[in-house]
Image (cartoon, rainbow, N blue to C red; front, side, top):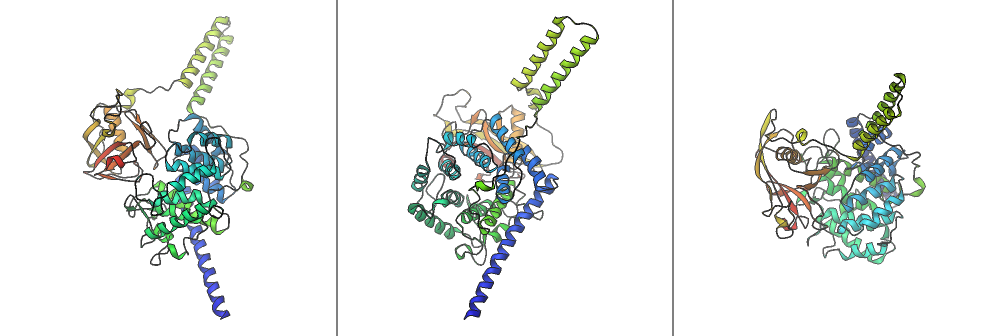
Length: 507
């Protein structure tokens, strides 16, 4: 009997060790891919340069995982993200909360996080309660909401099937998983949370696919699997050994393997191209699992004792700073020249100073862009086209809701128009081509692979409610994939549609 027990324990230990080894290998594979793509020698160099040059658009998840998994110097990234928040108006409440959570993790200014929390909690539907609770779980407080208020709100939004969704009556794997991630710290101490999470775990187990994965918007994808893995790790559940999440012998790790490409990056859907969101979320999930196995708890709960000092915050130089220094240098040289030429009349020096100050003000206060340099009145010629696509831009959902002059009464911003397609071009590429060709205003943000379109024709997300914004469709189908990740094919029909209810009003 003892031999059998010892054999079982040995097998269990081997399984756990193998699972941990596979998780660490997944982390290493993704980091190796990113370092090679960036030309960085090591993780610290990658954090200091590549991630700090573009601290948003997915870089924040890498920063969180890196600071939780290792003792890296976060000062350069912290400075970059702080500067980004100071210089840019981030309209999305949830996006601001994500950046605030990142600042807390990388030892940033908690005061900034508190200010963001007070201004955003509950302002953008369920996800603003989820990320608001994440911030409170890390000691950030505000006068507009409490931990209990966030918990009560999230519990009130749980559907009969045990899950959560942004809008509608059918739960979504991603939203359910992210809600569990935020509620997890209260599972043991809060009876209602305990019951709610148990129901959610049962729901997630019930919708898991036979291959071990999950789907969202009707399609299996890497990000859904990653989010569920993150939720289970936050709950101290080993997703690779728990029988509830092993289907036909397949685990979440097996499911993610279907999306990993030969270069170790990940695609959004099986057989698709590299997708940055899928890659970074897979890394975050693997890091969270490793944290759980080592007994460090949820990756979204920062351990204060491990915070790394940011040291002296490094200020990055943008073109305005360079131009200011250049103008000042030229002014000094002109003054020196006046002295050498003995043209020492005080008016000469005053004129130089006035001109220099005027130029500095122009550089720093005015963003000048020539329309002629950007917009084109003729079709853009492309070498080696592979076909054509059509694109239309509409805001029919705003009919009768506004009399604003910039919003067309018929809802048509751009009728169905044909564009030449080059290999590898995305829905975002064609949108930008249309903007240049027809002088349309567009505004988007995020790094490559994470582009998010926040405004078209001066109509922005949240202009008509917390769930309003732009969605793109290809051949009548919507995608959770980023618009600059989905590569178009000859004959595709692209639509950009404005929604006031997260797409529910477009069905």
